[in-house]
Image (spheres, rainbow, N blue to C red):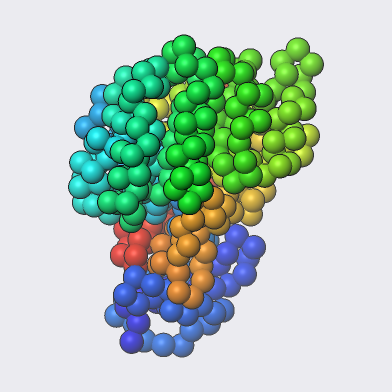
Length: 368
């Protein structure tokens, strides 16, 4: 007997699907499953479902003071089954973060900041004595089930007078640790964006890819994507949204789309202030913004499931597939009218809205 059977579901393609779950794992999928289960959810063909949504750039260590939130406030209550904290903590405080994260209903993973205390101050990479490869390695070895990569913020307010050096240190740490996932934050210069991109490799994650800053991917004088940014995308650099308070611009995203550049992964860079006051609010709202830009729902769902799971090597997540974790988001697509605001105050009207209905994490059902 299965623990849970989902009847009469449908994928975004319209394909009918039923899913059988036991011990937190997907054991069977088919158009029809005739079997008994301890619990049955009958969607009656009224709701869509997908693999559980993954937000690969959040800040959810609640004991911090600059950027913080609570995993379940941005996760399970918002249709998100998995969050990846993007460098809030460093080697000195990531164990304390892990102890709290274990208590969440939402799956929580972390990228360890290469600065040993993480983002306790805005300029965490201005003092390079805080970057200690042995401490990063210790975190990776002690918490392999939690720490899945490293993070370096490469913008003027963070690096002080250190130029490109923090990124070079991050790449060296990456190389010494089995080429683990690396996320790089971009913002105002220095360093210049071309300096950052020429040091990244295929698979490295560039977050805030569509920010509206002069040091972003858009040449604002010519109103076109910079050639070296286009080349980096074609090389296989992962372009991650990382919306945040100051890092998503509709026009940049639209111009990139016309140039054949689509975000690889869609994430929020959410923390309590931009969740409560906007412009982020939640992952669903960020997904709606990409729909307005011109992405299909099929693409959008891939970019919050399969794509982030691949980028961060979550080998049992991101797909509705036998043997994968039973993480599923059940949602509606509804017609409506919603004002969507980017990080620079520009707006678009969303007329196709996505609304999570139930969040299933490891086979446990939560109502949205």
